[in-house]
Length: 254
Image (cartoon, rainbow, N blue to C red; front, side, top):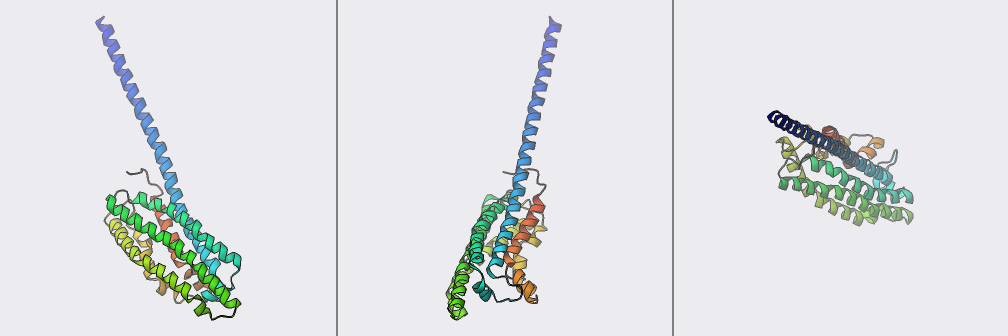
């Protein structure tokens, strides 16, 4: 009887160990599946940010690209109705894609203190939405340019109000972009995020400040492309670098 009880006790212990192992394996499998899902969506968000930049860059080119003429207002005045409408629609599509891309930045800043993380995400979201709004406001400049050419009105006078409105929107963005730049760069530099330090090189601030130096000596055919779509090209580069940096991320933090 004692031997039998001892055997039963051993069987229970063995069964308990097997059960614990099964639970452990199930949990590991769940975590593995969850990790793969997280990696998948993290990559999708990064690719969405890249596509957002490419779509809005295409919208820039629809507005005012010309192979030889660098006069943006004149090019918009001569653009077809289809080009102007399609460019305006691109503002909405790209903003959706940009905001999906912002989810990747949110993930990267999870290790930071919540307040600092939300400052970065709030400011970044503000800037990305402003990209779409500023681009959409260019429709007024484009239509004013078309009417000026059609009715032989002075092009500068016809577009002055639309340009002033567009510039006013831009000025509301610059202070927020400054706040974003400070917190983004400082937190990455202090290793408070999941980003490596090299991501700072691809953050838009440095290249935004160097814009005139980079574009001023370009030939007209290249200037209209680089200068005309400069800001969106910066975001294409940033989201590309962000996606590379987080491509093999293994866990999703809090």
